[in-house]
Image (cartoon, rainbow, N blue to C red; front, side, top):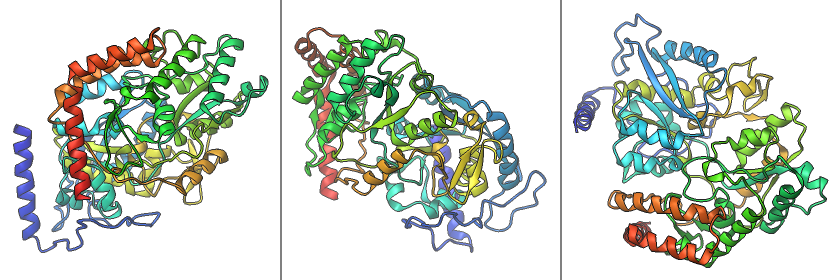
Length: 531
């Protein structure tokens, strides 16, 4: 309550100052269009005020940055090897521009899902944190972990982001009508693909991997003939669904599955958005049978439920024959392996060709200010620069020019030998039109993106966000049931699938799944009625 009162007071005081100021911003962007400029204006108010230390009094309407501020940011992913050298350079520039520096803390992929909510629940002392829909953004926002960002705050402290971000992107980032994130400002496809060892497919003269059946054949063959190589390795984390469900359940059936912490979906083509329990469908039973067949043929480790392995690192090292992720991540891994002259030939597989593909909403990646930050104004100014200042954006995204990369024109880069020393963590929160593309990014991955972008499927509930505040207890209970009864089914560890499904749904009923579904459907109906 204290922090909310403090920020209510701050907002009221700030609003009064804005009204009284002769420097009022008449172009405040209550909903501006996205800028098509590759490099946003560098004349925004906060960007150039107060160099390193002695700053004179700020001019009227400017932000006072005379006091040096040290910001702390929580990233997900492993700490880059060259973090210290890159952030030393980045902090020099930040200090010159806003008299602030950033210290990063990193939550490794092996346990980020457990540590991330604890960081917020414990009210630890930090200012900024990577946030995303897949990392529980909506839930954490409604719990009070993130600071609410008002229009006036953004216009003053993050003017470039405020100007350059489209109204649609800002609206998509709202939770229960309020904003708690500066989202990425670059669209991306998050449809899942499979990255596999093409040399192994050729070695055994297997058919092209263009269907679930062909993929199963590949996995079984590798399991039988390649001792010491795991056919498929999933991502680790507190996942409530199998890693392949994004491909074999969501894409295959053209469903949207909402939050993957809940077993609900609707058909993309259903204009009424009728929600159903995934576990009650014949499609899920069929998939559970498919998974059990794979498990019986050793398609993944027997210890899969307890594995902490980094699936990308294992694939790069030749320990696993296939993984799944989005096109950008897998394309980057392919480029890195080719740059390092990997002995393995790798390729991408889309086993749902012709199925409807969609793009991520803006909350796929973003940055939030911690609700208890002592320096929210400077935190917003830092976000603004890292997303919109060309020099700082290049540093945080690609490392040091001449060490980790070389710029190629305005929008591409060449990865240098030390590029692997500055990759693999959530700097994606600063995605913007200033992003550079790796000139070595695989052509096949680029072609897939282009083909999808030309045929992106937009559906009425694309920007719907579920407010789970009335069913938090039930969602927690349902999540526990999914982990205990659902995941073993999906990894083929339950002998009797019919009994396993019956037990699962019985436990879900007891956990309150009907109440969640009723609330979800009610909100969907209201959303569609307004839109």
